[in-house]
Image (tube, rainbow, N blue to C red; front, top):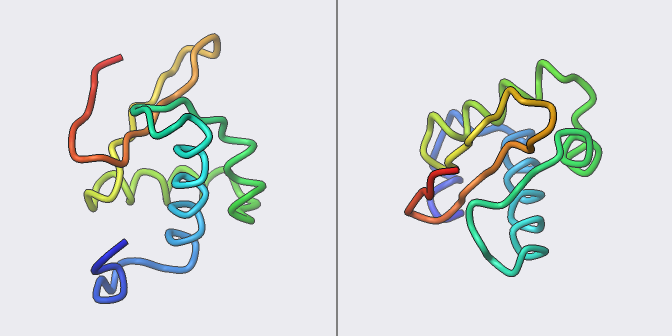
Length: 89
């Protein structure tokens, strides 16, 4: 999270979602990429709009804070990596 205070693109919603992602990563013993559940992330980060959630997670990916690996298959979970290397699914 170093440098986040100097990044004018980052809002409270970004910080909230990023913090929740850090917590989820710890639940998976730091193994990356780890699976995510949109509903749980939204609830924990206090994001009420699905559109806002997708905007924030895409921006975190765009800005290089995370690596978001979305899936469009309802039977599989999207995955996130916070570390410097991204594994393929």
